[in-house]
Image (cartoon, rainbow, N blue to C red):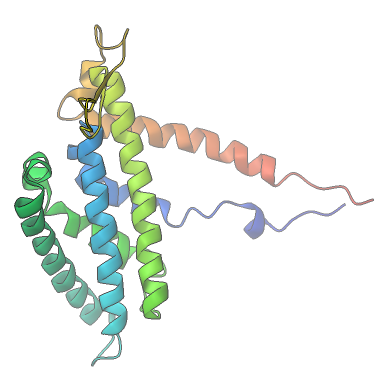
Length: 217
């Protein structure tokens, strides 16, 4: 009988607390799916570019944790400010939708890129890919929360306006009697809490199933 080692069978959850922490500041923009998409795009872009810049500057001077943190702070703040200016100039609707929450992109990137495991400087291509991967994980989680929150809390799914498509999908049966608590100010945290609880309930079962002993012939 072949029994896999616990380390190989257990799911890697080291990034989950960091992802959870990074999601909290961005929960305010999950009232509509389109706003979550804009926030996610900004986080992916800033996180990837900041990772690339941190890698290129890793050989300059002291590379201790304090210096890395200060560099990350300056880089992410500069990139976020540049992104805000670009949104105001080229996408004023998105800039107005994000509003005061746009600067939170820097906070999310600092949490996901500096606090998360494996954030030590690597080669520029690997740092860029790592930033894109962490940003994609954040985007999937944030958009999923927005999808659940808007669909159940408002009975709609707001996307981009394209041609004759108004950008809003109406969910018949829910829009008449939505769960308005999810659309309220604390609805994002409520939705995040329920989803985190559901994940914790499902994850152990998946782990037990994947670690079931295999019989050798």
